[in-house]
Image 1 (tube, rainbow, N blue to C red):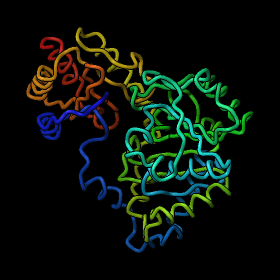
Image 2: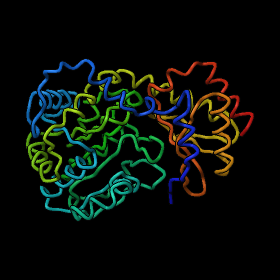
Image 3: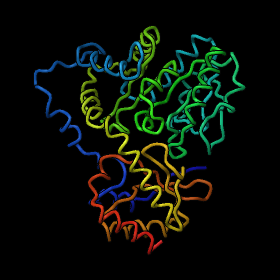
Image 4: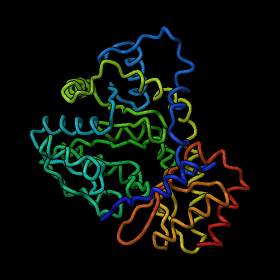
Length: 362
């Protein structure tokens, strides 16, 4: 079992740190203000899913993902449940398959089962991403298979692209719809050396988040063919997601997408650099050992009290907050590290001092 620990000490340290490893910095009102500074005051808001500001963004994202249409949602949880519901209704089957650590399974309070009565089949072991062998038994009775790229709960791991092709072919041959949980799709493109369109082409529907690697306020895109998206818009109304205006989310989503879309390779390279350095220190190791995206899980071979003191010392000696949260799984402690703009402003001398401080005190 995995559980979060009530580490108010680490949260306090992280917020006070001069530098932080993960993300794009502390989420403050300035993030919203920055996105709106360039917007003329007479720009007209969207209105219940209609209007130029939302239509242009949806078209832009549909083009990025190589799909006919796209629709903006206030949350990815809503978008993904709706996607699977549409495929389930079309097939007249409640059978859905996904990884046991899928977001729908562990973060949505049984929403997929309580709201849609999905009959869920887990594919793959918890410790590894879904591969072709794990889904090869799925037959025509299944409505949809969901794949998450990268798989956050196992450190951002992904299957080889060749296996994605095999899984896509199997789904087409068995009339199983393939849905992409691409919350962090942009972050895994450098590893695959593919475009968003090339990866999305394997999937019938695609979800993309705008607050994770992109660093916006909130919101998500769901993309697919025209008939799928028209149904998704109806379900969006049913779920209460068709707010009177979504521009407070759309404008930051577009702004930070443009600001960071070309930085994903840099974030990926940074994650590989840090993984190598952490793995060189006795008492630390990363999963995966060689990152496949801009993230990994950093494991500590210490008990929680020693981890707290080590992270506190790094903060005091170097001004660096490594993480605000440590989790426990199978009697091991780890932190999720996801690289963005924040790490790029840390001087090299401070980074070297951080590694030295850890090495000397772990």
